[in-house]
Length: 157
Image (cartoon, rainbow, N blue to C red; front, side):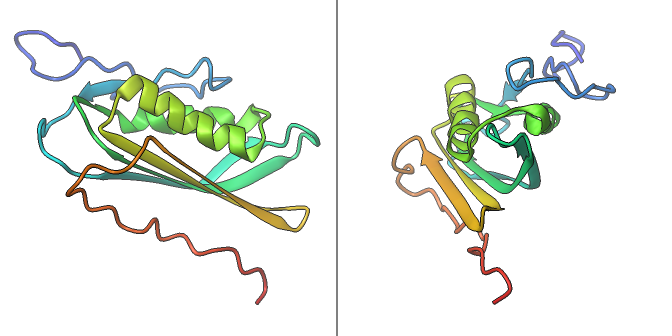
């Protein structure tokens, strides 16, 4: 789509087109579009229950349930570009902490939301589940911030 007088639609790279999975997070392009409710205080949530990256030590896949919450500023992230960005981690080596915080920081740096938090609920590796949390600061006053809704790992118990 283009941003022309005939069309008030945003210019986004991936919308309505087949898009290959980027080979790395660095090559992934995140598209942002104007916030349809500028000035309104609201929360947007993305959940990625089947997120995958690679262990930098063993090269084996690591799995996580990611939850990204943000209060938009002037822009919102286009969901297909976010999906492709998250998918680009399938062949990326990174520790849980680096991957989780890096995703949050990239979104915060580029999108400039009023507030953002990410929870990375990683499945056990070596018998130890690792949960990683990062946020840009305190949420804005008056923003309803629900629990992320991901149960702590309980194993077979």
